[in-house]
Amino acid sequence: MVNRFRPALTAAIAAVAVALAAAPAGAALFVVLEPASGAPGTGIIGRTGGQGALGDSPDARIPLFLVAEGVVGDLPGKVDGADALTTDGRLLPIGDLVGDPDGNGLLEFAVPELPPARYEVFAYCPSCEPYSFGRNLVPVGEFQVTDPAGRYSTRFSPWPLLTAAAFVALIALAALVGRRGRRDQDRLAL
Image (cartoon, rainbow, N blue to C red; front, side, top):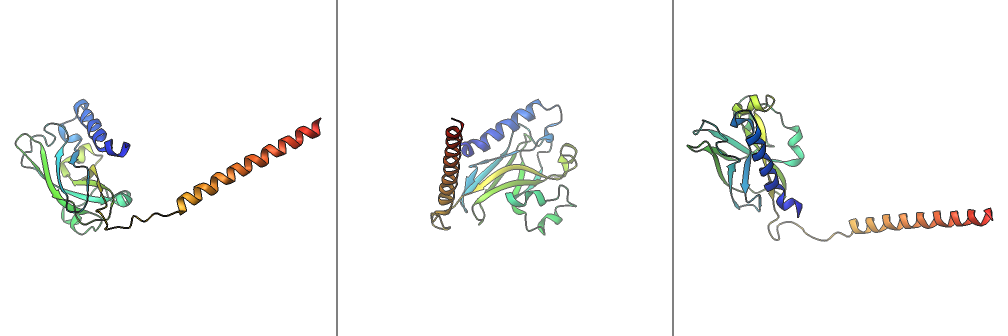
């Protein structure tokens, strides 16, 4: 239940942070994806959080990428140009965030053929460097690729349940042994 509201909560926090920040609008680039999850082939629309997030750059084109959550920590914070991104297999391009006359960004893409998992959305944004500790490859959102019916195994595995039952049985056994030991000590004390 909490995971369903996580993107909306994150977007609300980001919007408040942008509104309260004294820095220019480019200081907190954030992309809200609708829907925030989908199976391969699903159409997704992304918008920048807040009004005028791209500032006075309505003709901006910011490349966006999906990155598997497990490799996010291995990405460099700064790259030498957009060409360096095309050779990095960890970055899957999903399109460009395009500015409108009001300085808001828009992106439309179809979910690529990826295994179900959580992904981070990264932007190559050289103009974000002053506000992102010198980074030009910055995280701007989250996305969940879901399992389309029947493509991946959803077979039940009994091992997690058996492990939990064994753990509970060990705790119960330890409690029983501890209680019996105290009872024996109490009898000897009399």
